[in-house]
Length: 523
Image: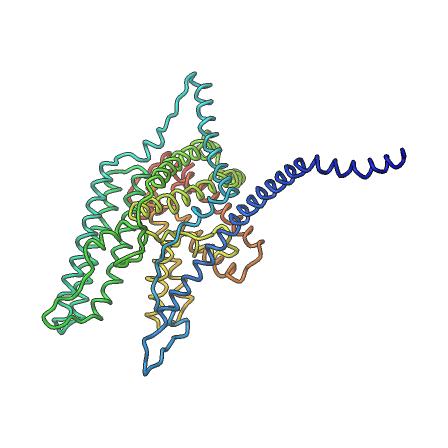
């Protein structure tokens, strides 16, 4: 009987225990399910973050190809729709296609890993501020942030303002109404070539004086400080490129579209040209893709980042560049000292390069793009992933590259009937190197052709040796090494020339003395 009861109890107890514990098991299963859901959601977010950039890039390429494919479809001929093959000659006749797309860094900053790198640069900026405050407190016994170098660099802003107004008013009115006057006569007269040549020469002469000689005279006569000089000279270059694009894009349309008898030709509106003068592109179109509204929070954050970059550059110059370059003794500048100075200048040099890229190509251009609701924000591409200098030159500054490609390289090929491609590429490199060196020479107030030499010599060599066939990550390392060394050389030599100019001023105004770097003879 006992054994039977034992069996009975043994058969019943497990069942009773399962029934009594069923709510516990249900609760455990709910917890497990909730954990799995949270984990799945995290994995989903992580995967979406990782593929977002690549997917956006693929969609942009697909959209570009679809737009180009649409433009290649011709109207029906004899009941059939013809389609041109995407040949090289056809692509040469296509212009730049604008489309709504965000900047690459705006997309990358949505990924937490990339945003952390941005936070690291912000942390370095805060460390610079903290070190400055600490050193000032130790040396002077008080907390003070002196920005004397910054105030000096941006001095005489009143002169810069009225000079900019003169250049802007000229660029807005003179090219526009010259084009209208020429276009109103072009289809009425028989001597079209003579009219075009005379009007072109007159406009070129006025351009040479107002946008050529006037800014140079201004910065030299008023002895503007460096940052103010750069504002005037860069605006001079921008107005020249903008006005050329407007004339270059509009005159063929006026020449091809003969108005009907009794009607005047159709010209672009002054408002569209005014919009073009401020929008962040150098390629003129009568209309661009526009956003529906302005994100004022984005504008405020971007303005804050621009100001932060300005003070960031100040701290880099004061804390990293000046202590390395400023001569404290009368010791000769030996080869050993030069090599050490170059390598010590690599860190501030590459930081200034990244800072200029972020401040101008991302923040400044996006600021104007947002205020004007300009939707095409592809001002740069992923140049940091380049394995060739050919790709680096194409993706570093898309805004300037487009202008050089369409009005320099492509027009050269059109004039040469698509021959001499190497000569076309070399001519674009030389023009770009001359303009870069001109901006630096006028901005710093002395001629020291370091940028021209690096750009026109090493840039051309690397463009042909490290071309698009180089796909290995090793070449990306080589590209970054070249950028590091190049920035170190520029920071070192330009700073040396600056101090040589102050210690050994010119004794005459001869052309040879103006073109000879002072650091070559100053001891």
